[in-house]
Length: 229
Image 1 (cartoon, rainbow, N blue to C red):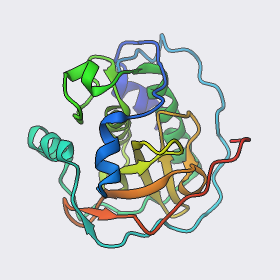
Image 2: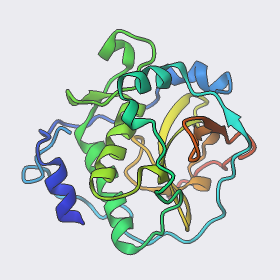
Image 3: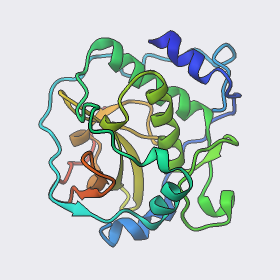
Image 4: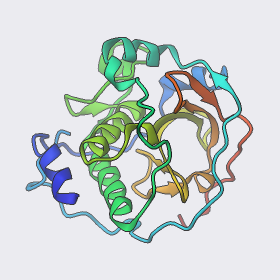
C-alpha cells in the first residue's frame, strides 16, 4: 500500500512546509454553528506516532447540519468530491498497514504544503480547494490528504471533513477518519494523528455519511490536549 501511495503522489513537487497556527476563514462559520512533492526527493519521515491507537468511544452525531458556504462552492466546482457512495463502508476496519498509511500521508502533506490564509492565497475570506500550487490553509491541506488516502485505496465515505473550534478558540478544519477504533484526526497543526478526544478541540460538525448533508457534533467536547502529546 505504501508503494501505491508513492506512485499516486509522485507527481507532486516538494515545497517547504510552514504550519498554520489557525484558519481564520473558518472562525465565523464555526462559531455560528456551523503536493506538490517528489517522494524520491522528500526528506525521510520521523516516527511521529507509529504506535497502533487504542480503541476509543465513537464521536456521535446529533442531527443534520448545514455545510459552510465555502463547502457548497467547492462542491459546485468538484461535485465528485461531495457525493456519498453507500456501497462503501462508513467506518474503516483499522489495521497496522492502514494506520501507517494514514500517519505517513498526514506527515508528508504537512511537510509539503506552505500554509497561507485564503485571503492571501485566493483573495477571498474563505475558500475550500485543493492546494495544487503548493499553497493552502487548513481545509485545503486536509482535502489533499483525503485525496491521497483515496488514491491509496481508503473509502471516501470513511474520510470526513470536519469543522472544529481549536484550543485557541478559532475555527479550524480537520480530516476525520472514522474507524472501528474510534475517530482519528488528521491535522495540519501537528504531525501526530490523534484520537478525537485528545486533540483539545470542540467538534462542531462534519460531512455526513448517508448523504451530502452535514451532521452536528455539538454535543461532544474534547478535553485540552496534554503537554506530552
